[in-house]
Length: 197
Image 1 (cartoon, rainbow, N blue to C red):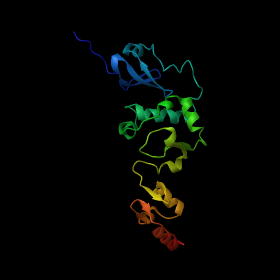
Image 2 (cartoon, rainbow, N blue to C red):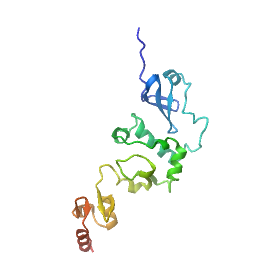
Image 3 (cartoon, helix red, strand yellow):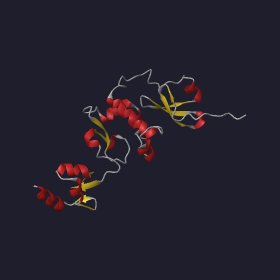
Image 4 (cartoon, rainbow, N blue to C red):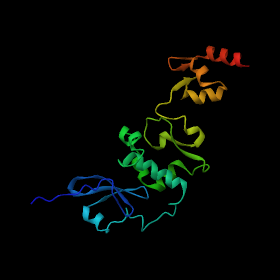
């Protein structure tokens, strides 16, 4: 009689959520602390023997802080198929820098959040979560940086059309008419600003 192996993908065991099956019968898991770990077999998870990535024995003491939650959610939406944000991140190929599997290294690279009203922002919304592509940004500005946002150039600087409109004090629609070949035409912009003053 063949052995029936249960698919544990998406199930939670103590602090570990199973992400996927790996070779040799093991399971890749995402710990509540945000670290990825390997459980060598199903029994170690289902029996309760394996409870975490090991962080229970070495806590960094920041589990309740907002920066920790941001880090944990960033990793989940890129790595865990069952995460509500996976379709917009992991499924699109957005990855988290290997170095950032460690919370303390993430904080070392990003620095502390300037205020609780900040969140992590990918400069290129189609790029990965990595030191060269991330910054802290106020939540009210983050809404403009989406993969569906229109990015245009002005004087060699690329930015979201909405943010340019805000900077120039004009509406998005009026500024959109100043864009030629994904660049803001200076003459058209000057005329627009002149008309509004």
